Amino acid sequence: MAAYDPDNIFVKMLKGEIPCHKLYEDDDTLAFLDIMPRTEGHVLVITKEPAPDLYGISPEGLAKLAAVVQKLAPKIKDAVGADGVLIQQFNGAAAGQTVFHLHFHIIPRKDGVPMGPEGAKMADPDALAATAEKIRNVISA
Image (cartoon, rainbow, N blue to C red; front, side):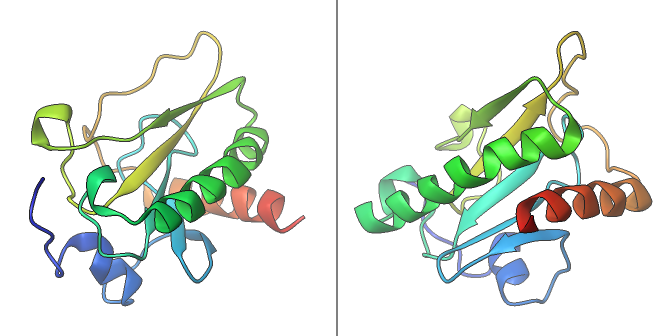
């Protein structure tokens, strides 16, 4: 298990030190757009519990995080007109984890549209803002 870094980028987002396209927040979780999306509407859902990975979170914290992923995934799918949703979660560098703060990826998928490579390119800020607004409208409806 990786040591938890209390100054990681997601903690900075939780503290408001780094901006993000926030879509949803409650006492235990935060959901925001990935700035290097693999598809339109690629969202990260993070826990507010200081957990580096799946093995470091309390069962209660994991249940709350999973419930938010379950709640948001169909809304994100609908907001961007996707045909399905890929849910990803990485544990450890060997598995592809790059930020050692537990998070889930919600990646909307459209039939016949390839998924972009991970972390390849920063999205256009205006496109992200428009996508965030579409998703927020569906979440709040």
